[in-house]
Image (tube, rainbow, N blue to C red; front, side, top):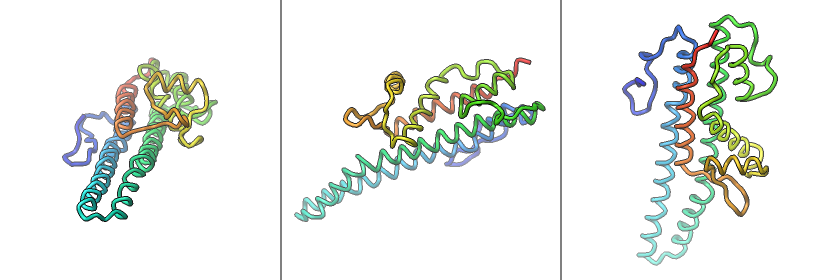
Length: 221
């Protein structure tokens, strides 16, 4: 994929055929997804820098015997790693899945307009990714959209739902099984989903890889 010459990734239109619905949808999705990769990296850099700052304070206060400042820095560093970091990863997960859902819905809308379809996505029963997948199969007549790593993609979406509705805690047995299958971690003591920066990167790569493949599919009729 061609990108413009910038430290922040952004797509170039050179490798997209804007006369094709799938290419147009993929380019517009890339306009959100490529910069978001930098958001993930910048958050990691920021957390690491703050963490290093607290480590430096601890080292300096050990030399000066400033026990109060040392305790404060150690407490702050512990809370940063145990509470703040996971909330940052939750926030990134929420945005990532929102971009995914909007990209898939946009794929449907562009096909509707460019293919001259009469049925709107909102006319299809259901919601979310499953409704869009049904629209793509039944109305756009694209086979195989909900294939490949679709189950993993929906598991990532389900993890987002846990964050939105349950504070990140897993409550249903089917969700435990799904998250275990795809190695989406949760703490044993309270069943709260535990994410690190590497997990968000893995989710991002899976979602973007899915879109790059799925949006290239053509209608069968």
